[in-house]
Length: 400
View 1: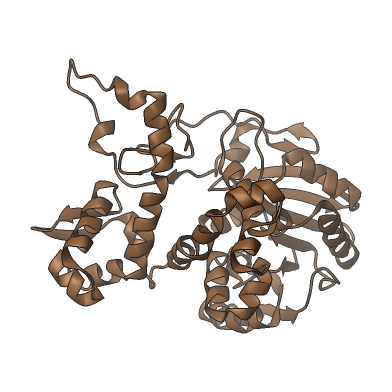
View 2: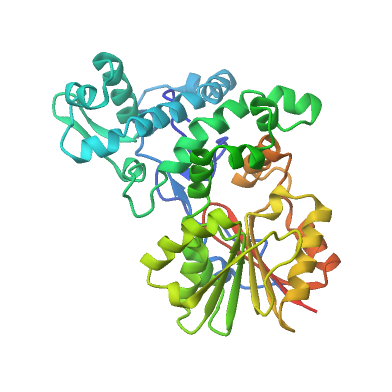
């Protein structure tokens, strides 16, 4: 992370999943098939997140220059502590719809201040800051312009992250402010902050619930799954708590003969129908309303559990997996999509989301072995773990 709060990758970085330039691939070490290691090529689809453009501090230094102070432990502490400045800067720009206004031709601070009813010089400072960390590019004289990063903040972007940014910049940001309470008492910081468990809060706050569903509706790892796992032999794929159906749509588009069942709460299904219809898949998807803690739709041969188990206790996970086991056809498959906790000393987004789940719902990420144990307790045989982008993994198990 540089002095403006931009995340930087590389050896020794606190944020090693990011990179300012393409990084050489590392030999994978965790993929298995029937308990045995499989060839390195199984992991060729793993992706990397790249953030912004290199800051001048990270470019080649002139001969004789010295930046030793920038690599000091004190500098590392400072960089860690100002990280939220960048995240809040991105949040404010997204909230003010700066990317949309720039895209419409308003590129100077004066034009953007008028369009957003903002204080011009304060907005100029924000724009200059975001340009410095690679979210925007340009200046006030020539105009500010979008980068691939800021294009993702637009409402109409095909892979828009606007809902995610707003959710992380508002409710989640406030919840993390009570991390100390969480660590001391064990009470989820979100529940302490809003005087309500997270899902109960969303039930009472429709717009927040819509944004939360939006954060769960897409991701580059959705496209990865049908690339690393063959769904063509599945007659019916059941997506448990499938939200807007983004993952199910990717699977169905990759396997034209396969049908799908989207299983979720009623209001989620109502909003999912339109998006699935837009992708011309409505005739291949059945919508079922229900609660997966009670039962799941029967008759499928593949069941998807994407980002569900990390919010549940071990006993709750076993109950859900057993529900899938009872419902699926003999020889059926369950695919769990989650981040995993890496071996000690290895950094990963899994460690970050382990903390995030604790803050939100008292949940936790698990290791690969933890998931293998859950499968065995539920009547499944673990088969393989497949890498996806953003440090996500697909853990595949067969009904026994």
